[in-house]
Length: 214
Image 1 (cartoon, rainbow, N blue to C red):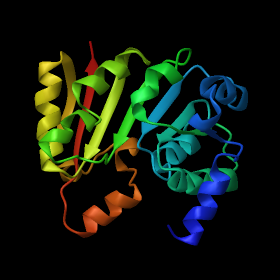
Image 2 (image 1 turned 45 degrees about the vertical axis):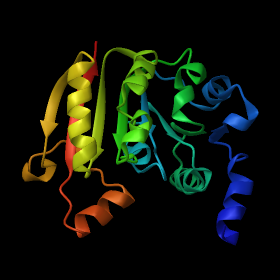
Image 3 (image 1 turned 135 degrees about the vertical axis):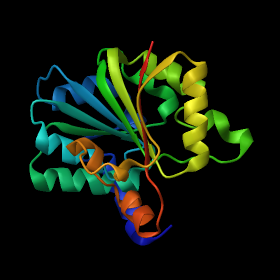
């Protein structure tokens, strides 16, 4: 591990807008930090929090939660959020398997899953963030009618998601196998993470699935 990464990991748990599984009571402490709001949006596998930060700037009346297990990446998002003076963004360091245990009061209006690890090996399919086990976890933390968005460049994950959603009573609202073919996109769909920028430079085709869970 490099020195810079080590320093980030040593500091990140103690940043004011970061809430780590190491200290427990994540939801309680986070609600004390965030301003009162009726709407909450979750960014899963947030990395540096590109979606949470861009959306928080556009929608100051909503609260945004970036969720990831990688503390060094969250460190970068936390610092940028502070530089921008955004108080409606918080970051959680924890495994996604514990979502229902962490969020017992907050119910999310929307979930973004931008460029998750595709876990291409068959033995790892249950780790994909659109696997049936994760869909069930999402059902426990969302409001009725909440929108969930998956953005990916991976054909395997995209096809797996379509099949799995069909088998698990999900309603697909939008299916874009080539997102940027459409020049008239909503602001939310044009936000680009660091990884998306790299994928586009390499000629990858970006796909988007928006769905609801019954």
